[in-house]
Length: 192
Image 1: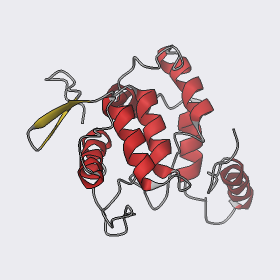
Image 2: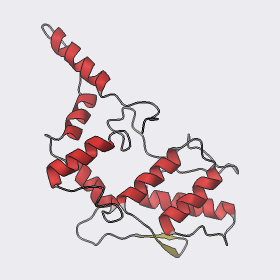
Image 3: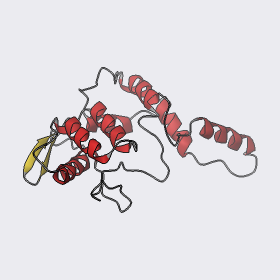
């Protein structure tokens, strides 16, 4: 959570060891992609994720210890809580999962173009120029604060809008259903 009373802390303390974490927004977005990719083995996710977050595979540690540290780092970075339905690694230990809502309003990967355009519109920030620079917590704060007149905010509004009901709303309802279909999130984003 972003707290303006204190500087942003890029460290995570795990069992008395402090790890400095690469919290640039693009790194965290790649980490999310890695975690959500069902085609990648869990041990590879752990080793790659550790390299991404702390630039160290922690090869002196056993796989179980590395996995535990990786899960704690992800919790510290993204705030993911362990869930009963959480996937497990080859030893049956929980792997980090991305928080999900019943009704997902946006997807950071599928909506990347809309997010990029909206950051340019509202803040005049080129997210490509900010790769490796803009902190994940700042990115999330700016994303949540995008003005209502941005394409991203309008699309999220369409996805979350209730369909009009009542007498005389058939055309409005049909129009909203068409927009919802047009901007619906795909189950598996396979397009580049």
